[in-house]
Image (cartoon, rainbow, N blue to C red; front, side, top):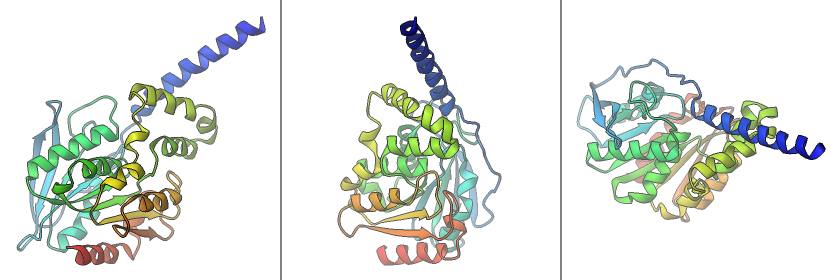
Length: 278
């Protein structure tokens, strides 16, 4: 009797965890509305690798351009989320390119988005830009940016990783605990295991901290000291994964997962890093 109860309980648990895994990919999108308000704005759509389309803003500065900066948002957001950050680069004289990943904003729908798919969209944008860029990613966009930088070193001059994690599976378990402690403890590990099975056990293989050893270019890691999604130790471990002397860390005092760009020190940190390395 007890044997059958245990078997049924385990099967129900696995099915429920699989259902939660599906829901994790369908988290409601939370777009914002904040279009660029500087320079010459081009609003266009470019081809994605699956035949869909990616919406992109390209904003030219008022005078001669110092180069191109591509800024990529995180999970559930859209291109508007990166506009305040892009404005800083625009004021420095850069052309800014701001896409919405597939299944975000008004880009084409695509089931089961993840860091791999974010990387595909970044590569589509880089091919469209067709010149070396400064690449800036936030959260899932930062993980995608790390994947792209490890594969395309000649296409990136500087790399900015904001709110990035170190190891993929550890980060997801931390994220689910931050979302709901009970869910994170009871179902988080199994949801992550289902994801790893779905991706053929490749998730940790594209962990930013592991990819970092192959990224030999100047990197600025940006992280809030109050980030509950990915606590600050992720940033330290990520920084230590890069070749010696290549990565710097800016810690936003009092900032959460998305709040570093709101700290008073942020614009100066961005400007100083760019001026030192370009």
